Image (cartoon, rainbow, N blue to C red; front, side, top):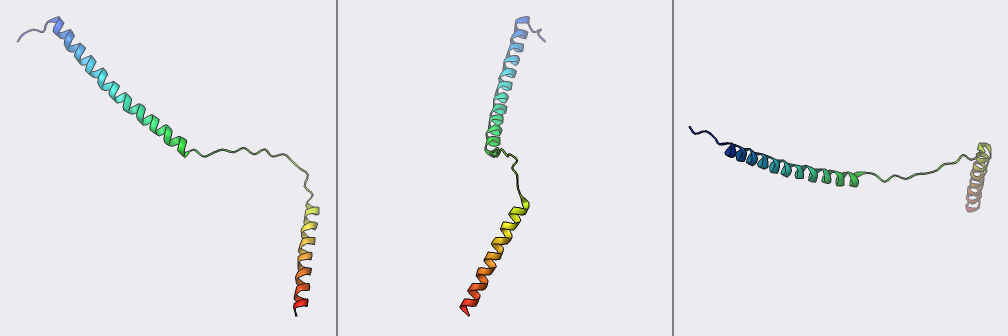
Length: 87
């Protein structure tokens, strides 16, 4: 067996280091591409957000109920009149 000279050892280590860095760089690009694809998909999926500002307002429940009852009675009276006039 022959002994490996220091310059040959250095060249082998340099070659291994270069090959390793190229392999890792190639993998890194794929990971970045996958991350970009995932971000694009998430942007398409995210719902649109709307903001609605609500302010308190006085609401008279009795007055509203009276109007509703008055409207219902007027409708019933009109219906009864139409039924009587058609007979």
